[in-house]
Structures are given as structure tokens and as C-alpha cells.
Image (cartoon, rainbow, N blue to C red; front, top):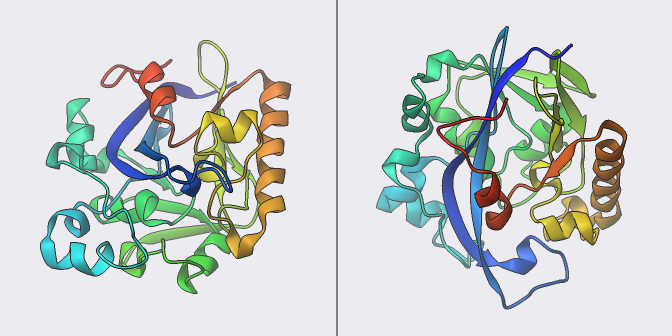
Length: 260
């Protein structure tokens, strides 16, 4: 039986970029606004945070912004992130502090998913071992070494596992080497599958389009993960959530209220 009590999707920033960064080979020349999300899961045994968004200082302090975002690798510049969107401030809106989060689960370690680790350095941090290795190579320019090189409590995994009864880590590589999605069994209603960046947009799922960035250009691996998540959703009756789809998010945003 699930131990999940509450679930919050949390908007931490937005980013405007060319759609082809989300849909490989499709949408070039069309700018989209993408939410940068984190997800808080409260269980009877503690709280789990899936992803942590960006590092606020790298966006809003001029020398850091110039170093990390104002270069050829970031044609569309930094995300838009306000002070109130920092994770400690988001948590405060629902009466919590960073110390109230026990585990941070990083679906992968790109800047818009792991940058906020500096705000959550007390927590145990879960990530797939292949992801840790790829991030430290680094495998692509979306890994910022400064985001995950601190003195953190890392816990590396090599396979799928249960973080708690009703919360399961699902391997979904392709966008990155060790990308992980998450299945959440709510106490009421249908389960949810957080695709993470295995599927940015509803379009990625419905039309089976790979993310724009694929690890080592392995598009078929990314497509295989999308199909795996779709099959799991069908088998479990879960709703499959894309990660950077602004219309999908707005239709389901309840913050500071929650799903249960």
C-alpha cells in the first residue's frame, strides 16, 4: 500500500528557447516557454523532492550569468527565475523548510534540474550511477560542474528501486545516460508518472518524438524510454506527465494546494 500522502508540482523558473531543443527534428524556429519544475512528495516516512531547479545565483549574479549562460552553448540565454521561486521560498509557502526534505531525487544532473542542490545540501541525494559518471565527464554542455561538486550526501543507484512504498524510480535513459523517471501512487485517484526530461512535451509522448538532446546521439534509446513509460502508464492506469509543457503544467498547477 502506498505511503504517499501529498504531492506538489512546483514552478521554480521558466525558460524560452527553440522548440527543437525539446522535440528532436521538429519545431525549429518556434520559441516556446518551458516551465522548470520540481516535485515534492510527502510520505508517511518523510519527504522526497524530485529535482531542484536552477541555481539562482548563476542566473542573477552578473559575473556568474556571463560565465554560465552568456556564451555560444546557450543561444537563448538563462532561464527567468525570481527570488520567490528559489526552493527555500517555495517550501516556505507551504510551511516547510529545506531541512524538512529528507531525500532529493535527481532525475538527471543538467543545470535546470540539479542547480538548486546548493539550497538543499543537507539532504540525501539520489542519482543513477551512469548519470553521475556522464555528468562528471561532462557528456554535454548542460552539465555545470559547480552544481554538483559540493560536499553532498550522494547515494548512487544502478537499477530501478522503491524510494518508499508507492514511490518508484524508473530507468528512462536517452536524453542523458542515467536519466530516471518516477512512478507515484497517490492515496486517492490514479497514479502519476513523472517523465522528467524523457519527455518534455505532450507531443513527445503522443507522437513518440525524442528530446532534442540525446546522449551520444542515441535517439532510439530515448524513444525506447518514451515507449517504456507509455506502456507502464497503460499497465498501471497512471497519467504520464511531460516535464516542460507549460499548458500541461498550468492545467494541473494547484500550488500551494496539493494532489492526494
